[in-house]
Length: 263
Image (cartoon, rainbow, N blue to C red; front, side, top):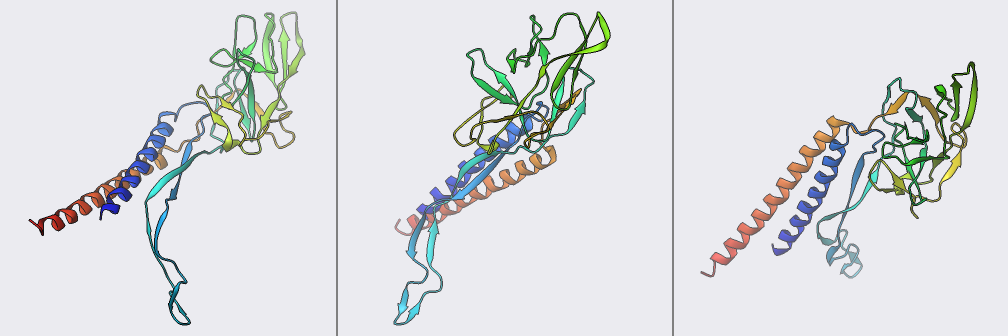
């Protein structure tokens, strides 16, 4: 009965983490390019009171064993990189990735990060930056005389200048990165991911090539969080938490009954 107390406690701890993750998913339902987290559970070590297949008598074996589990634990939280809905913003600096891939971002210290948030802006020098002011890599600078910016499906960025409205000038090529295991990326906030040993090295390519998705100008990718599913997850987690707490109360009552026998 003492073991039941600790076993049920692991269940309550695991469901607390499950609720924490679900709350984060719901909080980011309107975050551009956000990818929801999925909690994975695993059972803990077993107390082997009798292993399956041990000898019961000469020439006979027990078909089943007696193994008492120790509860559950969270084995990991997996980022799900399914594509969110694309919303038309009509903003010429907004872009969405149809398919796999990440926009490369350069931090002030020169390190690279990766994002699905295509809500780009211009800084005072005309450079394309993220909402936090981080430069896009490769760096693209829009001239002051530009009247319109065009971003092709292959990432080609061109502008129409005031002096030649019928002629477009190509400024550069936007390349994207993909990873063998995107779920292994290190989420760092600000809609940014960092490369890790688990993710593997980035594969850089032109949009639409080498397994990388194409660019849609004037669109943004919304969060892939399904609010209805997350609300159901909250209910399931709450009930599981209550069942584990009830198991603790039951074990406590049984202990109380045992103690009362000697009073």
